[in-house]
Image 1 (cartoon, rainbow, N blue to C red):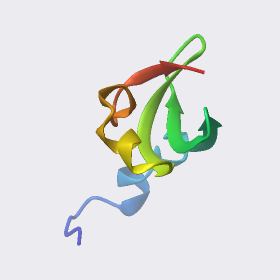
Image 2 (cartoon, rainbow, N blue to C red):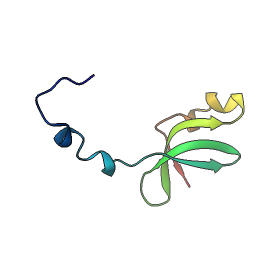
Image 3 (cartoon, one colour):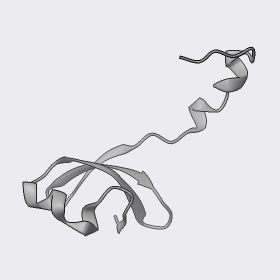
Length: 67
């Protein structure tokens, strides 16, 4: 809940400018990513993969990988 005297139009004015995560598949691992520059993406979360991928530090949320 948001209780404020500020109009909602001012609070949520930039919501359409926020980049939404994209669903990609890299090495048979489906994940949500955000663009992070030249050929790089930031992992948001893993969607479909083997259980051992969740323990792989290189695939942790927030990590940058080449796409």
